[in-house]
Structure formats: structure tokens, C-alpha cells
Length: 337
Length: 119
Image (tube, rainbow over all chains, first blue to last red; front, top):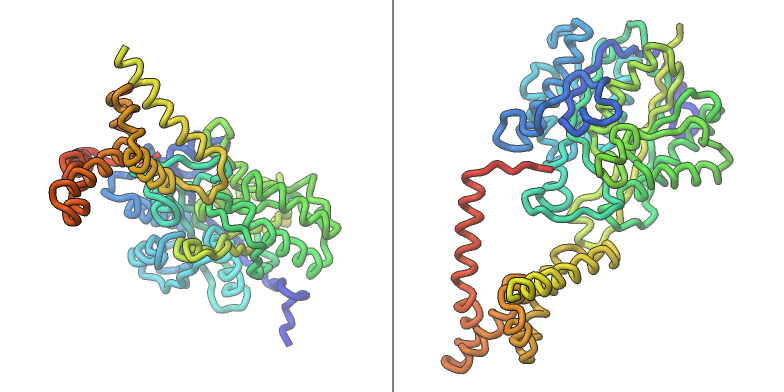
């Protein structure tokens, strides 16, 4: 009998772990966006002195993790596990970054939901007494993602209006069994939901049903509603996915109109010509690790539901005529006074 | 006047491509435009129509992708006349060989000298 399970998909943590440090490293475009002042480091370009985009991405992830450790004044030797992932084949950004640390590594793939997936799993490790300190990280890079999922940027292909701009950035958080908060109090793991969207240039619409499903299930499992949260924020549904999620959740009887936003909408200004908004693991990772944690720390939001959103496709699946399945994983971040 | 005609015709061909991209479903992607234009140029060339466009607009018709299709088709036709079946197969590539080699050489040089900007 799973005593800490609420309803179908939610877990309640009896000893809520605390986030004790975070780091975020972004590219210049993100630095020029509305949240530019919150990121720990804004890079001058997206290559970081490396000879490939892929090498640059790993450099950012490693730096984000080091920044989180520095902020908490923790040595890598004190960390029990690293949980990390990214968008590339075989999650090489995470693998090769973990190579630089002498810490047991658990690699994850949740597409753009990886950061929240990692935070949820890390929270379980700490709450369950299996770890004292866990480091999470996720990264994405505009050029590596375009090469991975669509066309290499060297080709100069045009992007349609519903496309999103993959965030060039890496975020990391350090979780511990003791601290001043923000705490992770609940996690809700999502189911894969596929409504038949096939357009790889419109991820937001493909992921929205899964995110809506996780939100609704979370409310049912916990008995809470939108009013119990100061903020509900999804990972990277951007403009179109955000609207669809609002509608789907409203149909289930919950009104998110007052306090629901999305990292993909926050991270860029429409004037930056990013079409529908930001996406990628780095989107939720950098926004959570900087802007969101700061706002919770300063008690501007005390209780926040964060839902990472992932599109679980590959180019091969799309070429073979498959549609795009989505997933949404949620954590509740809370700071008691 | 020649420059103007080349500009207008070449530009119009690109406008057609842009309209196709903007007005069709996401399933029509840039590779479809590429293949469609080359094939379209080859067909118009085989029917004898494209040569008139070339006579009118010069480089405005030969440089865009349908112009490449035109060269492929004309090369195949010429090859067929001199060498039969083998000429039909090889003629198109023979006629476009300098263009293809130049494209490979210049893009290689560009890749060696410059770094991609990314955005």
C-alpha cells in the first residue's frame, strides 16, 4: 500500500526537501529578453569559444551546475546524485557534463519536461532518505535542437509562425534534506497523451493536452484548486499551447485564468521575433532556476505549481507518419515563512 | 532594361515559392519547394516553354531553381540526341556539372573560413 500516494498520480512528500542553490546560464537572446536581469550568467554568444554548438551546450550545463553548487557553498563531493537530461540523441549534453563530475549520474529524457522530471525524482530520493543532496540540471541550445529535430541552422530554412524558439540555456538546482526553502512538497508524474498533432513546428498544441491532464489530475488527487496556488506555470507551451491548456482545464471545471502563465511566454518578448515563444529543456530550467525561485524566495509567490511540458517525438517517428505524444510532470514549490 | 527584367522574373519565381510556403499546410516544407521547382523547370523546359522565359529574362530565369531544372532537361535532350539512352541519363548532369562543382567548392570554402552564426 503506497502510503504517500495521493489519488492516481500525485506523491506527497513528508519531509519536503529544500532547494538550497540554483544556477542559470543563457545565450544573448535570452539575456535580452524580459527576464534578462534574473539569469546568473548571460553569454556573449552561443558558441562560448567552442568549435561546435554541442560542445557549447555542455559547457553551459556544467557552468549552471557549478553555479548552483557555489551558491549553496557545497562541494561536488557532498552531492549524492546528479539527475540531468537534454534534447540531443543519447542525451550527450548531460552524459558528457556528468563526466566532469565525480558524482553518481542518473540520466533522464523527458524532452522539455526534463528539468521538472529531474526535480520530482530528486525530491523523492531526498524525501525517501536515499540522498542528502541531489543536483538537477537540464539544457537546450537553439542550434543543436534545430539540427536534432528539424533542419540544421546552417541551411537557413524559414520557420513558420507557429514554431517556437528553442532556448539556448542551462538551468540547475541543488536539493537538500535541510534548508530554508523553497521546498518541494508534492510531485505529480504525468501520463503520455497524444491527440494526433503531427506538426513538428507546433509543439505547444501537441503538449497542451498532456499538461492539462496533469493539472486536472493534480487538483483531483490533492483536492486543491487553482485558488490554492499563487502561480501555476507550465514549461514551454508558449502562446498556442497556453491557450489550449486554459480551455481544456476550464472544460474540466477549473478556471486558470487568474494565475496561469508559461515559461516559454515569459522568457522572450514578442518583439524578439520568436514566433510562438520559447521552448526546450533550457526554457523551464533557466526560468525556474532564476526568476521563479527568486520570486518564491522573496515570498512574492508562496506556493507555485510548476508543470514541465515535453513533446516525446523524434524525427524518425515523424517521418514515419507518427503524431506527437506529450507529457507533463508537476512539482509544487512552496516557501513557508 | 535587361537587369530590370531579370530582377522582376527572378523575384516573381521567389514570390511564388514564398506564397506556397505561407499558404499551404505545414506538411509542405522547404524540400518540397526545392524539388518542386527543379522538377517544374524541367517539365516546362521539356515542353519548350522555359526557353522563352530564359530568352526574356536571362539570368532571372537561369539562376533560380527552375533554371537548374531547365539545364537538366536540356542536357538530357542533347545527350539523348548524341548518345542515345546513356546520353539521356548522363546529359543532364554533364550540362550542370560546372554549376554543381562550383557550388560544392564555394560552400566548402565558406565552411572552412567562416563559423556559422546560428540565429
